[in-house]
Image (cartoon, rainbow, N blue to C red; front, top):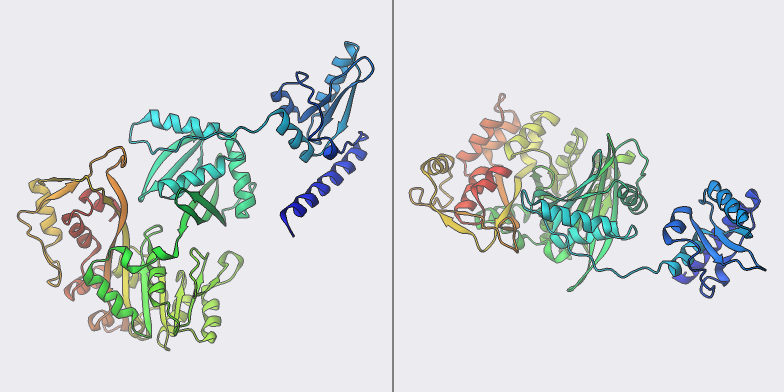
Amino acid sequence: MDEDKIQEQRREHDEAATRQRAAILGVTYLDTRTIETELPLAEGVLSVEQMYKGRIVPLSRGTEDAPFRFGITTQTPQSLVDSMRREYNDRGDNIQFGMISGSGFKALMNRYDPPKEIIYDDIEIAREGDSDTLASVSQTLNSVGTDRVFDYLIDQADKLGASDIHIENQRTNIRVRMRVDGALHQVAELDKDRYRVIMGALGSRANISAAATAPQSGHMQKDITTDTGTHLLNLRVETIPTMYGQDAVLRLFNFDESLLQLDRLNIPDRQRKEIDEVISHPRGMVLMVGPTGSGKSTTLYSMINALNTQDRKIITLEDPIEYGISGVSQIPIDTAGGASFADGLRSVLRLDPDIVMIGEIRDADAARTAIQASITGHLVLSSFHANTTSAAFSRMIDLIGQNPIFSSAIRLVIAQRLVRKLADNKEEYEPDDATRKWVRDVLSDLPESYDKPDLDSFKLWKAVPNEQNPFGYKGRTVIMEQMVVNDEIQKFLRGDITEFHTETVEATAKSTGMATLLQVGVLAALRGETTLEEINRVI
């Protein structure tokens, strides 16, 4: 059905509902469809503000022989109708009211108050203490038309390269913050009346309730048009009730399949070879660990893309699906609705996949099913919540106990973080003695397979803010701790070593060639890719 037909049906439904309401209230019903474009405007009878506030529109100015005629809607207060009737009668004028539909009111108001084409300034991220920029952005956002404020906010977040938008209710206003390159920045304070507009848009587009008293999850998509073309933006929406209303976080996933490439992740050669070697095998398990927002999904999708060939069957189980990849069977798992990754995995294994990606292992049932799949001829990729690779082993053993099958299934665990990259105008400096000593201590047991820099004469770099990069950083780079599961690590998993803790697993892994997250991060700072401050902030 074409768009015009759909609009026509919606209008007919609106008119029928208004006709029925008018009959119940004993008010004359007016169908304005035949007069909306030709009706002479009764200028000067009411101000535009009065029309919007009272949901009332003048239809004709009164004369000696004809009354003043007004169109009212189902939202027009009866008190306003009564007071206007008294006022006009007292001065000797006749007045009549007819009920018009909401669509008719909007069409007539577009003539009394034609929409203005306004180009709003782009949002700028304020530096710390820069209250002028904050005030300017707040003023811009508060002036954006109610029908555009939500779209404008998303467009601007995409333009800034933000990974998420935080909308937070406070007592007197709404705080808007955006996470850019992993760091949260306040961008504006909105008037409280914008809350209804934003929640209304979220409710209709992300299928959530604006009146809910429990946390909600939703999903929406938006086409973003820029100077270089159009791209699809996926948004994951999470809301939670707070003291002053529902706070919302919108996570932005800029869908561009061509960007999901291992080559684009700037993984050091040694670690990239370990990944390539493990995922080239037809079976086994690879776990990605790290906190929310550390890029686990992007790395997993990039691995899937690398493996996505005509001779392989790849199935993913996700909650929700964040990127769509051609050639891959992606299955949404509605865990909020009672579905589970374990049940989904048992079902898809009957489809004879070569590779299975599980969005997240959350319980013992999913862990055991994934392990079983990985030893029966499938390559299983999954994410798991833990801070480090050794902590992931401890958590997994807490879930399923020390398990010989797990020891032969798991082949690689990657702990990941994203750190901000220095912009090109970075500045080199000589570190002080305390910093030199700290760097030497961190890298003292760096495995020999890594190229250790000269720890006596190294330099560091610092961020230099400018107009283009107000914080001196541009983009992010991945920091990975990779534990290849060898015979020594398998002893912990089989139960050969009955008592162990995270530190002993990490020490064993380091003795067999693993560099920790902190060590990999410090090496990146010594290469001038980032700063020690950024490494300490994230790791």
